[in-house]
Image (cartoon, rainbow, N blue to C red):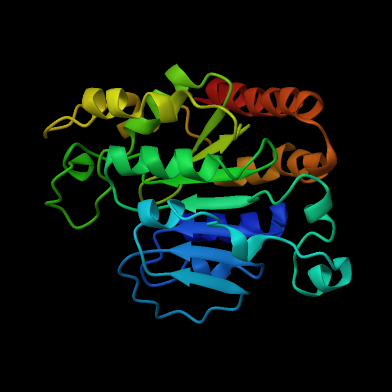
Length: 270
């Protein structure tokens, strides 16, 4: 299954109330959305028909998130019936604000950009959100280079998985074996966590290293990566949908358990 097929299935199974995308390109992934959406790209060239209530932003993601109210397009109004007609949560204005349900990060393929994109997206997410990071399983060292010299290019964004595992153990990470270069699903977002934001400069200095990149064999061989069909069939998505009305303490622990079961089953099959 390729990444666009995976995102299509997520829209159908996860039923996000809204969608945010960084890196539009020709619009193939954006064309899958049918809900209020924000899409950001400084040089998009959309060729696909788009069928959603869309705020399409021609800017860098850094500039977009520097705005005072970047996700205003997704926010619910006061009238619950009008919100329903527009595909927005009817009472979000009165119950703690708007949460971005599904985000797809496929921007500049360099570690420091992916790190900033993730920390910016997490500010508007919570434990019921799905955050997808593309190009996390490069197939060889050349494909993982910071200086692009191949057709297919993943860059060194794969390093973000290790940084999240080390510095954000509260998150749940599920690598997905999609074509061509893999996706990482991040669960359990915490908008109040500042570890990555406060440590940004140190992390970039440590991980944004010159080519050639050192790519772990586990990544190139996709050890531990879950088949997309198995992720889609797991209880995780249903738990997240039902959890939109729950508190973090009561839902995130069960979410971690579901993901652990999925990853343990994958390890036994390998």
